[in-house]
Each structure stands twice: as structure tokens, then as C-alpha cells.
Image 1 (tube, rainbow, N blue to C red):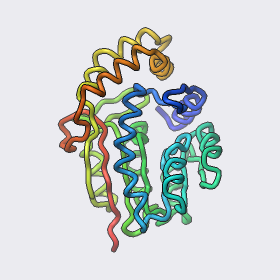
Image 2 (cartoon, rainbow, N blue to C red; image 1 turned 90 degrees about the vertical axis):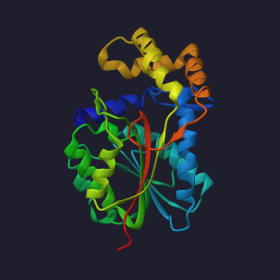
Image 3 (cartoon, rainbow, N blue to C red; image 1 turned 30 degrees about the horizontal axis):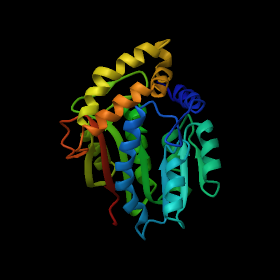
Amino acid sequence: MSVDTQTDYWNRRAKYQFRYKGETFYTITPIPLYFYRRKRLLDFLAPLVDQPQTKAVCDFGCGDGWYIQFFDRRFPGKKWTGIDISQGMLDQAIVRSPNARFMLFPSENQEDYLRQPDLAGAFDLVYSIAVFAHILNDADFAGLFCGLAETLSAGGKLVIFEQTGPRRVEGSSFCRRLSSDYKRIAESCGLVIQSSALIMFPAHVFFERRIAPKFYAYYADSRENDFLARMRANHNRLFRWLSRMAILFSPKSVWSDTGRLWGNSLIVFQKPEN
């Protein structure tokens, strides 16, 4: 999927939403999984945002700005920047957090964009949630990763949260890499690994592979609108109930990131002080 196609894809995604537990969502992930997985992610991120040395924070791929709004309310006084490729998503982020700075990521020369002078060493913390899986070209992936590394201050941290597994899987709009791919690229960009973990609900992996596809097939009207089929499934009460039961039957959700399991790798990288 080209960058221009990515822009169109996310602008279309911004037009579709649904309500769950009083919130507005745009995700194609089964919503109970998204909801409970996000709780684990927030538990990991909050201490990093709260650190006194964390003054300037960037949400790379900020979408509608939910995370910026959440953390800004909890930890006031930080300087926030959100970067996203979709103007539709940014329009909603601006409403959520009018005091943050939001930047539209270009469809061309993306690596150069991250290397503009006012972004060099600008952030003490950068986090990127489910962004790199949508960058299909490996050269672009490596270039953007190193570009983000250059936006870190000395001692700054880069946190990525991405779907990973024991083997590479590619689709029309995603590339599920190995966690070792992220670690290898980060080290080539001069970053060191501070910590890593895998968030995974075992029973839900079965649900995603064996049950959810039947719902998606029922709601699909074409392969190009696969994301609409997934969003329609999220409206189905039985689909949500089965997803939630799969979560509840997975009492352990945080695992060692060995690269042998399917899940979401949460990796913290740090830029050396010197």
C-alpha cells in the first residue's frame, strides 16, 4: 500500500466510528480486546510519562488524540505533540486537546520531515502505537525508525507497541513483523533496548483465528472494504460477548517477549546520554 493510499485509508477510517462503554472508537480490532489491551498499555506508559525528566512528549501516529488527552489530564504540564498522516484524525485530535501541537505527516519525503531542525532532539519521550505495522516497505520502515530516533533528546525513550509473531505476515494494509526486527533496526539507529514485553490473551488468539473471521465474512461486501466488515462486526453483540469471554478466559496477559508467540510487543528503547 503506497503512502498516498495509506493517507486515503486513514482518512476513510476517520469517518467511521462506534460507541463502546461511553467512548468513541475507530478501531477494527475486536473492541473488548482493544479495551483490555489498552489498559495494559496505559499501565506501562503512565510511569514513563510521569517521570520528572519527561517534559516534551510526542505521540507518533496520534490518530484522534485519545492518548494525548488522557495523559495530559493525568499529568498536566507536559508539552505535547501529535503527528499523524490523516487530516481527518487530526481534526478530531485538535478538538480533544486544543493546547497540544499537531502536525500533519506528509505523504512524501517522510524521513526528511522527521529530520527537520526543530524536531532534532525535541522529545524526551516518543511513543508509537500500532503504526509501523502499516508501513509495508522495509526501507521506509527503517528510515522512519531512525528518523524518530533523531527526535529524541539525550537519554530520551522511544516506545513502540506493535503486533508481532514468530513469523512475518503481510496483508494489503499491514505487515506483522518479528519483535527481533524492531530491536535490530533500533540498534542500527543507535538506540539501546531498555525493556520488552508481550501483551497477549491466549484464548482470544483462538477467537481471532477461528471465530472472528466468520463474522467478517458475513459482513464483508468486498475485499477492499475489509475494515468496514470488521467495524460492522464490532457492532454485533454476540461478537463482542464472545470476544469478552475470550479475554476473561485469559487470566495471564503479559508475557516475556521471546518471539515465539503471537501478540503485541511493547518495547522501550533509549537514546544514550552520550
